[in-house]
Each structure stands twice: as structure tokens, then as C-alpha cells.
Image (cartoon, rainbow over all chains, first blue to last red; front, top):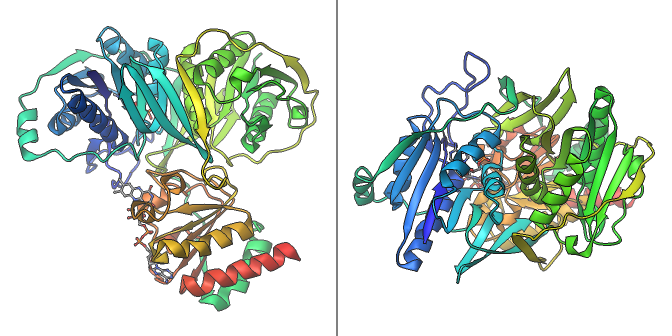
Length: 250
Length: 321
Ligand SMILES: Cc1cc2nc3c(=O)[nH]c(=O)nc-3n(C[C@H](O)[C@H](O)[C@H](O)COP(=O)(O)OP(=O)(O)OC[C@H]3O[C@@H](n4cnc5c(N)ncnc54)[C@H](O)[C@@H]3O)c2cc1C
Ligand SMILES: Nc1ncnc2c1ncn2[C@@H]1O[C@H](COP(=O)(O)O)[C@@H](O)[C@H]1O
């Protein structure tokens, strides 16, 4: 099994977001960056599949700045074999240029499976994996919570509103990972040591501009200060009254 | 001069509410741009495009074929891309549902165009301008989309459907041919057809404060009384009390209901990430310092086991009388 996993370096979910002086990006000072949560599921799935197959290779690919090397190393420390950084100064908000850069890298790689996270927790686009599949004309199941691969075929399950879709496809294919797919392993100390010696190739991403111009980045509108209606069950009539007559939502 | 096309969503041949939201957003945009609104309905044979004129569609394309009964990603994407390429469109709007989140990037990639996902507002201001929550809702981008066309997916409940009578002339269109690379073989239904948190206009969520899985009956009863969906914090999903489909928050679903109840939920930042765009938040928690009260519009401090049954009862009274 030869598997590629595309990963993104994103701010830690615990990080406090501050707006930068340019008002179009975040202030990165003091922000810890990590491997995107959903990409951890993708890496874990790739490692499990390779282990089950008994042989193969897991290649980590990321588009990003030099700093994304650290993110790739995290995935290598989990057990992946080698990494490729497609270096770009800045990754914009349009998912298509990123998808194009990844597709160009993956096209002739001979991969049986290309895995992604379902979304990147910075841009929330939910797009790059699906777009790569379209560009490479490969079958794709997005937001998979379950994946079975056998005899060159795959079956994935994805949660939809009020049900679960069962998607069938032949390899090679693209799958994007949702929470529930597996429990990602933590890199062990030995893995972290070994990751330092694993190959990490750097190439130029050559991103095209895309069709999204950032006008402004703001903090979300402060919610209007609410009020405590009261204490205990006796406050229920006042709450119901407020919901009906003030907020008009009942 | 460009038109706007809304790619609508049906389930079992019935259009979903989010389709009317997408049409309403398309109408507002087209009026500002000086264009028409077209709609595309993809579904099983017999699926109808009637009545969409009421929500502002000038023209409705219907691609009806039994092969399209379930969401078939490749066939839906090819059909939508064909229709968009056959017209003069500035913007393609879909709902950011499970289907829309999969279909929108496919259509954008096929058209080689820009995608703005999960937007909460879209308007025309000399160009198409959208707002998109990012960083788990901790910041919001205002973006100008310069691609023509641009594909936009709209967060459910972000726009209120409005009637706006237009011609709504229905025209049959053919489903795109070609082989499906991946096939949706079936949709497994849960034991109980539950309303989904991401689409419901009222959501009642429970957290660890409920103490045991069985006590979620209180949440279910309140949800039934308000006609809403049941949601859950990650703590109770991880404990196995509720399914992941119900989880609200950063690693669960993002909800934008008009009314959100957080019961026995502390209000961790990752939970709040999923509810920031709810219109009204109600918190019930025994701890007056719980962070949930900082974002709640209305709160009651106290024991949920006393408050929730009483609330259910009062709401039932109103709904019945
Ligand atoms: C990467 C990451 C992603 C995460 N994603 C999510 C996510 O998507 N969604 C999510 O919800 N969490 C998420 N979390 C977890 C989050 O940090 C919290 O741990 C979780 O939300 C807590 O759940 P809770 O509020 O139910 O439990 P607790 O924090 O234990 O809160 C229980 C609350 O119930 C109250 N209570 C107890 N008894 C009663 C009573 N009798 N009456 C009234 N009130 C009572 C308590 O005062 C307390 O405030 C994530 C965490 C991480 C690190
Ligand atoms: N810059 C990037 N480099 C590599 N993979 C990426 C990048 N951006 C997104 N991805 C992948 O695409 C998935 C979806 O991201 P997005 O469409 O940005 O929400 C992520 O979980 C990653 O697997």
C-alpha cells in the first residue's frame, strides 16, 4: 500500500486568536501551531492500513512555509516514512490553488490511497481533499467516519443529516477523515528521534493567486451581554416569558 | 450581466428547508447584481421544481433520474457543472450541509473556480462579498470573491427563507452521463429518524451535568416540546452516552439555530466554537461562574433536574394552548 497523507499546520485549538496589525490576518505571536486535528485521523488511518497490509509507504505532503516542516515531522514521528514540503510564503483563502499544487505533486506518485482531513481548523473550507480528487479524476469519499479497504476496493461511511451514507469505490481513491475514524496515536520518544532522520524533501509550491481577496479579519461580534433570569425552577416562567415576548423565539 | 444559480437539496424527493434559504440568498444577490435567479433540482424521477417561483426563482432546471435518488457525488457534480457552464452565472449557491460540503468543492474544481465555504452572509457591493467564520468561529473573514463564477456554500439557518413571487418556469434538463467513480450504495437510517442539530432551528444540548445517559430523557422531552433537535457536548459523546452525530462544537457540528439550550454544559471554548452564530442562547447550569453564562442571552442558575422538567411543562402549555 502506498499512501499519501496531506497535512496542514494550523493554530492550536486552545489558542487565543488576536487580529494582526494588518487587520487581514491573525497575530501569530505566542500562538502554538499544531498538526490539524482531522489530519491526525488521516495519518493514523494510513499507518493502520500500511501495518495491516504488511508493507508499503506513507508519504506526508504539506503546502506551507518552512515552519510546516515541524508539522510534517510530527506525522513522521507518528510513524510515516517520508515527507514532502511544497513551500509557499503564504497560503491564501481559496482552496483551489492549494488543491492544484497538491494534485500536481501527487499525480504520478503511484498512490493507492490519498488521505486528507475533512477540514482544516483554520480556514474551515472542507474542500482541498475533494478538489484534489476532482482534479485527479479519482473516486472520493469525504468526511469518512469508517473505512474498509480490501481487494483494491473501499467502503466508507459518512454521516449526513439523520443518517449514514455508505460509499463504495475502487482504488486508487481519495478519502477525507472525520472524527470517529480512529484514535490517533501519540508519537513516542523513539518515533520523535527517528523522525529527525527521515527524508523530508522541499519543493516550490508555485501557488496561483486564486479568486479570494481578504477585505478584513475581525473578531466575532461580541454577543450582547445576556442576563441571569433567576435561580432554580421558579425562574422558568420568567425565562419562557422572555423567550416569547422579548426574543420572540418561542 | 450575470445570474445567480442555487443548486438545491432534496431528500426522498422533498426539498429541504435549506434550499429555500439558498434561493432567498440568491434572490437578494441577483437583485443587487441586476440578474436572474435560477434553481437546479437534482433528484429521482418525479422530483418537482414546482413552487420555487414563490421563493424567488425566475427559472428552475430539474434533472430527474432514478440514478440520482441518493446523493451520487460524481453524477450530481457533473450535472451541476454542466448546467452552470451552459448559462451565464456569476455565483453558484449551495447549502453547507453534508451534501453541500461535498458537492460545492467538486463543482468548483470542475469549473476551475473559487469556493467560499460555509458563509454566514453574502451580498453584492461592487463585487460579491461574503463573511466566513474561521478558526473555529474565533474570527470572521470578510472576503471579496473575484472569480467568475464563484461557488459559495451557505451555513444552514444563516438566512431566513422569504417568499418573493417570480415566474419559476420549470425546464427539464438531462442528468450528466458518464460513470460514477464512487457510488453511494445506501443511506443507513438511525433507529429513530432524528432532526439533525446542524439544520434544526431549535437545538437542546445536554452535557456532563446530566450525570448519566438515562437522564438525557429530560433533554429529549424538552426538545420534543420545542420541536427541536437533541445536541450533546463532547464529554457526553466521549462517555458513550450520545452519538457523535449529535456533538456540537469544534470537532462536532456547527449550529446556527434561532434558539439554543445548553443544559449542564460548562461552555468550554471548543463547545462555544459550534454555537457562536446561534441567535439566542439559553444556559441552565448550577454554577453561576460557568463560562457558558458569558455567551448566554438568558440564564437560569440552578439544578437542571428541577428546572428542565418545569421548562418542558411550561412550553408544552404554550404550544397546546
Ligand atoms: C481539540 C479539542 C476539541 C474539542 N471539541 C469539542 C466539541 O466539539 N464539543 C464539545 O462540547 N467539547 C469539545 N471539546 C471538549 C471541551 O474542552 C470540554 O471538555 C467539554 O465541552 C465539556 O463538556 P461538558 O460541558 O458537558 O462537561 P463539564 O465541563 O464537565 O461541564 C458540566 C457542567 O454541568 C454543570 N452541572 C453539573 N451538575 C448540574 C446540575 N445538577 N444542574 C445544572 N448544572 C449542572 C456543571 O456546573 C458544569 O458546568 C474539545 C476539546 C479539545 C481539546
Ligand atoms: N496547505 C495544505 N497543505 C497540505 N494539505 C492541506 C493544506 N490545506 C488543506 N489541506 C488538506 O485538506 C484538508 C481540508 O482542508 P480545507 O479544505 O482547507 O478545510 C486538510 O485537513 C488537509 O488534509
